[in-house]
Image (cartoon, rainbow, N blue to C red; front, side, top):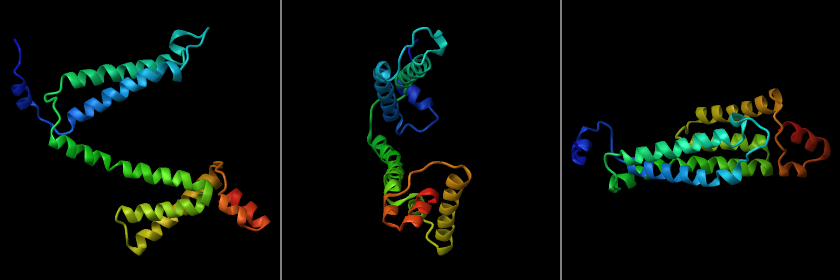
Length: 179
């Protein structure tokens, strides 16, 4: 009793766009992780089986590979079409925010935590469409509050910015410790 593939596609309620591409990328990512498992984890002698450093990562990566393969195998439509490429472009737009964050992480040690956090909040708020004076002030104040909470209240150790080296002695120490 074999099912016709077109009948299976007709019964599927969800959108088909992007599914094949997602399943392929997910399966390949799981295979890549599995290939790196031996060099990234270790098997410790004298440790119980379930407490091994390699055990739970191996279980999760093998599960990813198994269920990713099952997802790929049971897809109603396996071929890539034009709508898959359009859907992939929608997903790729999220990478812009990865670039924003990486720029922030790269600039904090150079310009300092407080100035970069305020600039990051202003830039991100503007990018997201919050362009009124009120919203830009709110984002700047939020940036200052984030710095006060993390450095002042939580005592998170974040290195001072290289730009602080140009300040006079006592002021430089104050900025490195607090901002």
